[in-house]
Length: 471
Image (cartoon, rainbow, N blue to C red; front, top):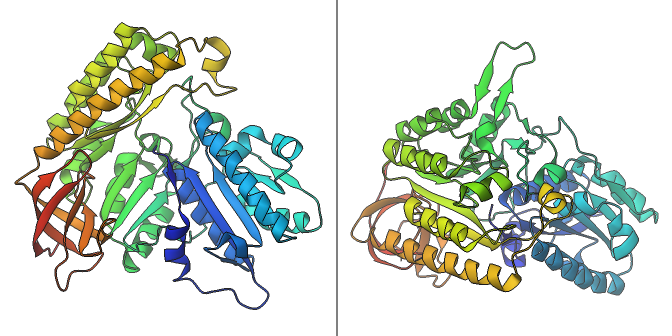
């Protein structure tokens, strides 16, 4: 999943809409790093804190409680968190009584080391322990710094209505499951988020329906591996898999777009693909991480598929959904990767014709199988050069992908103002491509419009609106 930061500006958009602090309330400020799941978790945390008489603030200096929701996927992500903690410490010193907490995967991985070594943190809270935040805060107020990183086999937060921190009022995340049972050798997620467990489908559908009634027009179903979603009633009478859940959410309303992330190639089924083709409001976009295009490296990564199997899966997607856009995650310079094996990855990018990819040099993570069994023996300069080659090729394919859309007409969900001009709107088509177009009178965020693409870059389509759409 992609790396992002919930900026103060984006937080401010939603905070301005929420009720300000009442008498006796304290303020909290939260930053989120990492994958979309972390952003979804921050919305759960916000809900828990508001129930505990906290109000959100966009201004760190006004906060009584500063939280950072962290990512452990790469060393760089952890370094960023440590830098932010030093900044938080300055705020804390200027306002005695301010508390600082670390949430998420980095909290789970480092546990008490944060309290022992960093000396900048009052509480450390893992992804399954957010309900314990009010008591940890109360203890911290008394000077008792605390840790709760208990990994649960049941916690899904299904009963908590998240406070939406996105701010655009059009798109939202819905967490459908937590944890991961895949033991990819490079990945810390099974150790920081625990085993897989799925929310009951009725709470997911109810959340989607509530969002639609509040004006949202797109939901993204989130999980570390959504295709392995499986739920059954305690009496065993009803079973729901991901393909069935996808249809249940799509049936909420034809005007509600449905996306999902992330898929593991081994688990995405023909039933999922056929439901995507059957429902107009299930978007034609799949994030299908390959990680490497070489079979030997894939085996070292414990990805459970080889090169040919993945190619066949790509073929199957395009057979069932010809206009589907596929994106990927790619690691450059995994342990012992040769130049020929790197070339296989470049060939796979060309074969799959990814619309875009998230591309990184391999970063060894403590505690993973790769760190225990394999030597991180590809020199950094080689990793960086291979990564540059991967990025260069992907940018070329992305630009070619987008240039092929020039002259085409797409249905676009208006999300809000373009980043570059308040005279333009931005929105995405079914293939998850961002399209920018001039504003027209009477059109507002949340509307569906048809847009003809006139220009393209490797990242963005530029067009002109033709009409609004009645879905």
